[in-house]
Picture (cartoon, rainbow, N blue to C red):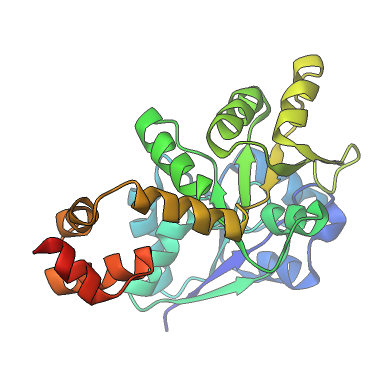
Length: 278
């Protein structure tokens, strides 16, 4: 029989947050795949877990995923853990999960700590609709495109950031998104946990005087829906109907569908669009 891959959530700070189910699984599996074995050994030693470990991280995720799936096909049960939190969230574990599912190998998740959800619940911002972006990309062009997408995002936005990049990221967010409410969460579940509700401008001013410390989760309010609709409407009204049509046709949309979409965007009838194109 094939083995099972267990996605085991580990504490993001307070060791008391680990579940008994995760502890039992880590003791019972044949092997633990860890993002950083030097970090994970401290967790395992604390709970007197002696299960063998192997490394699985960003730099070996493709090759090692193939090796781990081979072990699983041979019948080994393997637990995947990350340095902190839930595997596969902003983590190379997603590659291993995808490989296992492609091979028909059973995968199950043992829920527990997740920094983005913990921060969202502490933020005081809307929790009904939210999007998780993780770390912004290092590539400038890709980052610019993502920030532009986030500018129009109406859901609550969650980002991760390291302390040495925080000031730059806050500046980029303020420049593109404008003034927004934001809650900065750092060192979650740890001794010096801090939840700092403010605005993007307020955060920039604060960190001009205070050096960022610890890992951050940024929870940012989405764009107001009414303002979003007004901005979208203004964008289309700045174009002629022919230019508006060209936007969709250049994206590969069929002419009939493009006419329908243009009419919806502008709040006019398809007949009006047709007449303007004659």
